[in-house]
Length: 502
Image 1 (cartoon, rainbow, N blue to C red):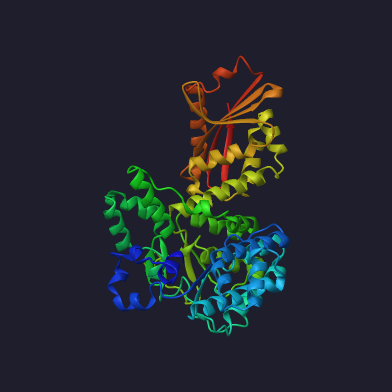
Image 2: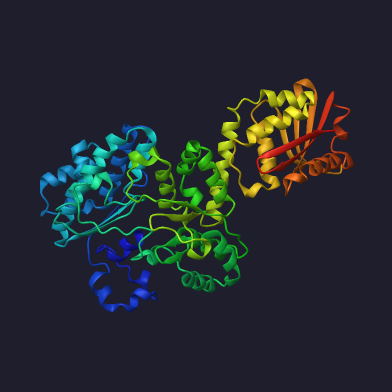
């Protein structure tokens, strides 16, 4: 959106920005449109708050900043005093609710009068205030503000040349636009404009060549590609621009997740909190690199997001946490009303995994673990097997059930319960997986974890774990300082476990 503002805004002389780019070849378009129109660029991405009053004050702050960008209008004799007074009330953050609701309409009219030209309105992330309001319990109050603001600005406003509005949810059906029917919506399932809102493979290849980083192509594809918009596969432009900046500074820089720093990922967390056994299984399929088949509802409003499982999958898709699986990856032909969904790339998979880990850490503290702890310190391997299996079946697995998942699961059980937990620290002649210290009672438990490839291997792998503890002397150093030293070998197969003690 800022690029569009740079291109259209009459107050700027930005031909240098676009010099040498493909658009420069379109001489007529540049002559008619480049820096030829007044532009009102407004982003609502920062309108947030735990209650309505806080959010409304932030909205007034955002609008006041907008006034600072257009305070030249106050010097014009062509603009009415009534409009100047409303402008000043918004700039001073003393505006009433009604003044706030009518502000975009008034400001676009002031700009049209000043320039004697129609105004291009660029409204970015229009629905963030509604998303935050829905999460914090003041949706109806914020809806009333945004609804009137948008309808007065966009319906029958003669000052506007055209408007571009971006958001997560399809705007034509959002309840704030019920009074406005002249929208053309382009969503991530459409084919009209999607190659222009992400980088294609050809463009990425060219950018990597420009910075002598063609050797990074495979790694970059793994991290930032994978979004399937309409008929195009595209890379996330935010990630690519950040990574290109980093490798120009440090040519050996590896890809990292940039998007995760721009979002609190509350959508994924609320989704996991909602999860029943059916949803849990689907999340595990996604995290293992597979796809799920769902009906997608593009006509959502924020007050109904959590009303069904279908809506939750839809919002993950519409917000970019999931994407449409490629046809060649789907092993059967799907009806038109169903979509195969998958996690697009490594960056988003890491966001899912981090959120699942945090969810488990938070919820493990709420679970009743007393029987499990008793089993550990009483040497009751049968009860420990039963209790661990019970908790394991309440978790969401990631990493396709690899050993590091089970180690994190085991460490998470003891975290926050008054024990000291060590993972992969040197003991004896190697690194033991997990060591639990009960300092007040002078006892310690050593765990070695194995992942079984088959159910019938669990017994053998459990014995192998115990042998490793013995052969590498993991417990030896504790014998002089602790009254009790318990050693457990654990084998896992999917959501089953087997525990044996030495």
